[in-house]
Amino acid sequence: MRKRFYLIIGIIVIVYSCNGFNKGSKTFVKSIKLPNDIRIDWYVYGSMSGTGPDYLQINNDEKEPFFTSFCLSDIRFQSDSLYISLWKGMYELDKDRLRNINVSVDTLGQIWNRADHRIDRLRRRNVDIKQPHFVDVFCEKSGCE
Image 1 (spheres, rainbow, N blue to C red):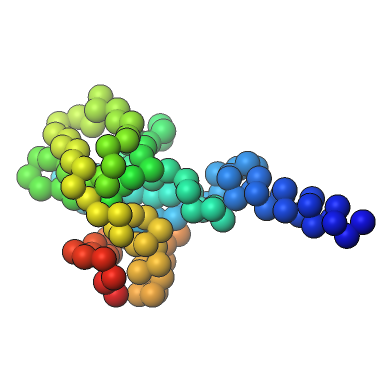
Image 2 (image 1 turned 180 degrees about the vertical axis):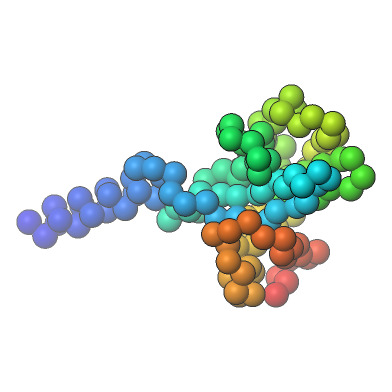
């Protein structure tokens, strides 16, 4: 009887951790400002497993995110270009949704700047990660703060 109870609980935890019931709440990793009051948000959906994809979305766009990847390392905006760094080359990008913005994707990012590591650093700084924010916790080398 007890084994069955633990088995059922274990299955529920596994299914829930894989976002089986719903996507959960957004956890914001970083936001960047663009001209004309446009903001791009980098977020993940909360899950117990921490293996969900990263999303990039324009703040005033009701559609799905324009970028999805499991390997996002950093985003930044300079002049008229959005720079997206990955630590592996796997991603989906809808460039048609980014009007007048050049997009450059590189695979020079570091794994220690992925979302789960940044979220830990943001929590240590007491940043509200349930809301868009402009706090950047980029780290140059492994083992930072």
